[in-house]
Amino acid sequence: MDYLLKGIYKKEVMYRERCAREERKRQVMENDKLQCGECGFLSNTVGKAEEHAKDYCHTNFILSDDFFIDQHCCSCPTHCNSPMALELHKKKTGHTEYEDTEAKRDRLVQEYLAKIEAAMKQRDEQLRIALEKEVRSQTRLLNKKLNMRSCLDSIKQSLKFDEQQQRALKTLVTIVKNVAEHPAEEKFLKIRISTIEKRLGYVQDGFKFLELCKFEKVEGGMFLVLPSYEVEEELLKAANDELNRALSVMEE
Ligand SMILES: [Zn+2]
Ligand SMILES: [Zn+2]
Image (cartoon, rainbow, N blue to C red; front, side, top):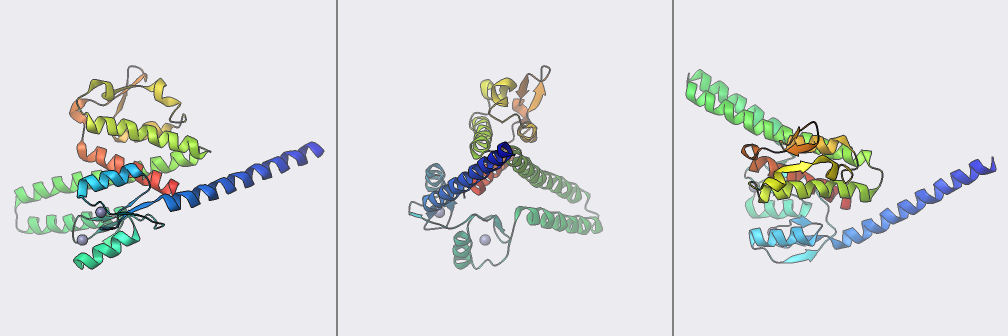
């Protein structure tokens, strides 16, 4: 009995310590977020802020406690990742309608279907074929993005500790980034599974995620290979976005 009570007490103490640790981390991260003063882009690492500054020539970053959102503008290709970004975009452009990734995919499908129908009415076969192709590739990409998102969610659910989750996600970031930056380099296209298994926390969804990026298991499951003709810039960008999103939500 005494032994049992001690066990429960110990669990309780560990649980409280973990909560306190998470609370402290949350506070620090909140203070650590950087926000672009010009467009509202929110970043939880200095690296991402620097990348943004380089890409857009926006250099005026401020410390911020804003939070992450996932909203695409319906009138232009802008993606807003914070409420401030959304407000600034609205003010600057007057664009009023926004939607998340899933809604965007559903809307695109509906729009394309309507266009296909119109083209069929006009009996314009070539236009119909071109549109169908476009629908397929856009929907495929957005569906893959959502599948990647659910892989990353289940990686986070399967791994108990934040450090394990971070390590798994960052391992995927490195793999994706290496291929995106050096699409012709053999050493980044062929990965020995045993070297990443541990870093991915032995969670199958890590491999599923890489398979969504077109890596295949070969040589009896010893290696993951991405054939260089299968390297797809858009797909890798989607993977990178989803990884950043998963890390952002976690570090929030
Ligand atoms: Zn900016
Ligand atoms: Zn817009």
